[in-house]
Amino acid sequence: MGRSVSYPPGAVVAFRTLENGHEDDWEWEYECLVEEVIETARSTFPSLQPCDGWRGREDRILLRNAFADCGVSTYCGLVAVWLAERDDGGYWDADANHPRSGRAQRWLSQVASRFEAIFGEIRMIGRFSSGEAIFEPRSVQMRI
Image 1 (cartoon, rainbow, N blue to C red):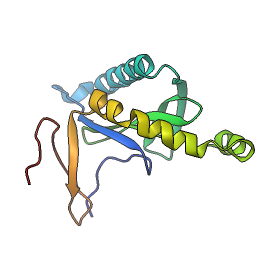
Image 2 (cartoon, one colour; image 1 turned 45 degrees about the vertical axis):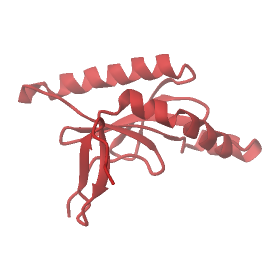
Image 3 (tube, rainbow, N blue to C red; image 1 turned 180 degrees about the vertical axis):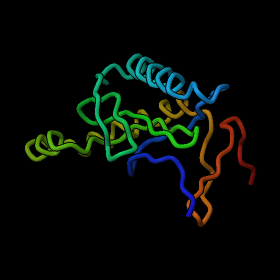
């Protein structure tokens, strides 16, 4: 069974590749990507603040605001930069007293197109039955 890059369920996702000319420079390229995502996301969405955490084993949280986590996931040179509703205990405890989930979904829908335009270089156009994803450059438009 094939697989692709991980990202949280329901996330707004922008895909790109991790370019590397030398096999031994992956860590450096990854750290440059992380710095770029943090700087760009914070300047575009000022409510996002630094956060160092994980969702599971593959989805790294870099930034967080009252409603969402922003992070990166990688697999074989494919990168998913994602924005997803928070899923931590503090968020759900606060949601029990003052519902936040609806506001979180509204905020995500408002920023989704700008987020994808800023971070996306390629877009997923489908999946094979094995689970492997198919991508194309964002500039290519599908024709019907």
